[in-house]
Image 1 (cartoon, rainbow, N blue to C red):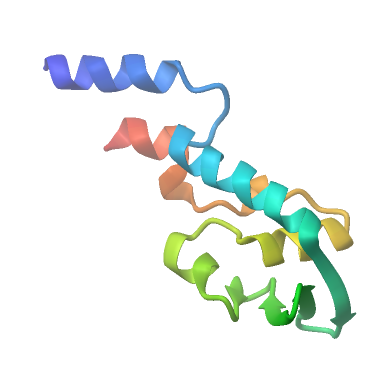
Image 2 (cartoon, one colour):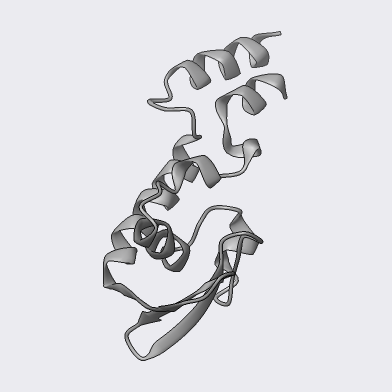
Length: 106
């Protein structure tokens, strides 16, 4: 019983709907996205340049060739660059298991 109370208290300290560690990763990726450049886009995806590297991002399938997005289910810096290019915020794309509602239901 006390564990449940502690979890609710912890969730009430969150400053937004996304878990603190997920929010931290998202903010770090936003910062890293400043170094990325949208080189090319097609109907289904984007080519993102980051220094000497090139990555392919498909926003519809939530896939990036760096594979970080698939591993963490938090948009990587390349995906965030693509979102900013189409003038969208990346926060709504973070998976539901990083959200406060899901945390409280667990």
